[in-house]
Image (cartoon, rainbow, N blue to C red):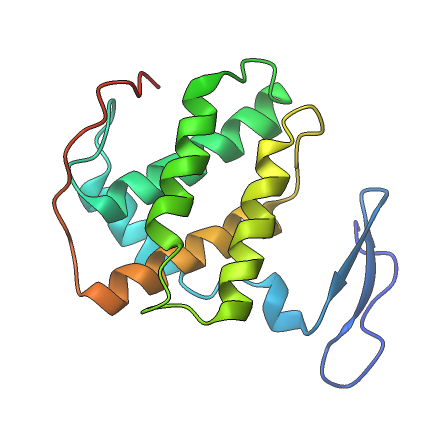
Length: 156
């Protein structure tokens, strides 16, 4: 059982010890991916088995999952400019004040900066799930899928 210390209040907020790391959540809902089914639908319908997606939403989800896999399975041992391009792509799309308020944009920026600190790989799912939720929120706001040009410099 990985959780050693649970919520400290009735709204689910608390400090949790998980695999020797302490994680602070404003509420338990912050720790749960809100748009799992929508993300799964985008993954299945818009992310090819190899190569880049033809849609913005598909490429966002693909980028998050490439970053997650590299950190959790390789501890960023293969990190190179292609992973930085994934981070930049996510930020370029999600840095959208028509969709997100300033607090959400700051959270996205901090999450991406955490990923860019490749020498200290982020291994927990919460950050990747949170970014994925933001990708789905962006998609819902724009009622996609939205076509995109493939990045000739993105080889991953």
